[in-house]
Image (tube, helix red, strand yellow):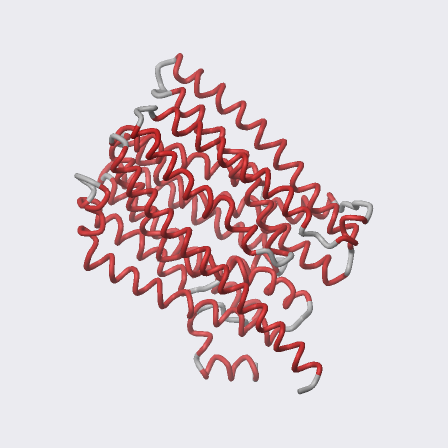
Length: 445
């Protein structure tokens, strides 16, 4: 065996190991997330569970706002700086992102709490203490995404995924049981959840920085803020547009309907995202590889990564959606009385996730290859139309109307991104990329 073959074998084993760990952690996340949604729905009253659902949706959306595109921007620049062996820029980018996100998320948390109590004084907000305590989760949500990008860029899948998605998800199940078992109340649950997340993300922040190679940590930090802002701004806007479609549908249900309905819709929504979790898992591992392959101009390897990612994620998504179609009422009944009526919402939302997985890692490729502005335009235009449709259809048809508009958004923008990639790069990020005819076209454009 030659040295090149040995090196290639080690690299392939490392990739396989990272993918296996990422998949294992994502499976743990899916199980804990689903168990948490089910158990909290059964332990808390419908109104209390609605408050929890609405709080988590608002904090998730606000977390993306406060992260300001740092997660994907870090993946892009750290991949580029590693290829260039720019140790000072790696150190500076990691430090700049962590400090900026911590400052912004802390400031927004304070402003949000002031707004909540102001709204309560004006008679517009109920449960002000619960919502205020829930917003203490915001710095943890925002910083987790930034730390995750640093950890992913340097091969630590566990550090990227475990703190919030596994350890915290498991811990809040225990917190929920304690708070309901000893009648501590909703406020105690949200306060304990915020405390647990803060501790885990503080550990993650320190550990992710120490994942940097010693030579990088020893280098004097250098920053290219002008270029960072130019790249991060469209990525940030695109991230906000994308996450708005995963969270603002829940907020829309809260605005046009009631908190009990929010809880039931949230249960269906959290269940439906299982259809897309394989693609999310693959993107965590493939993101740094896509960035490195593109900037190294290794188009053959890049096309193989894209095609494999799409087919491996689409087949499980289709199977999960079929399970929801035939067994939706039975699955939703586990949440408690009244939840089985939302099986139609579950199927509609899962169909949107499945359609998006068919087109693979199209958005990630655009962001990591210098087409972030085109991705932003696609996402914003689709998201705005979807948001208007959610409100209009929600007022007329209720929860199923909101779900229909929310499900259409990822399917439409994934198709539009795939179409742009095909026209401007010749690459195919969809599940069709594995067809022999597509492979021949790539070899003979």
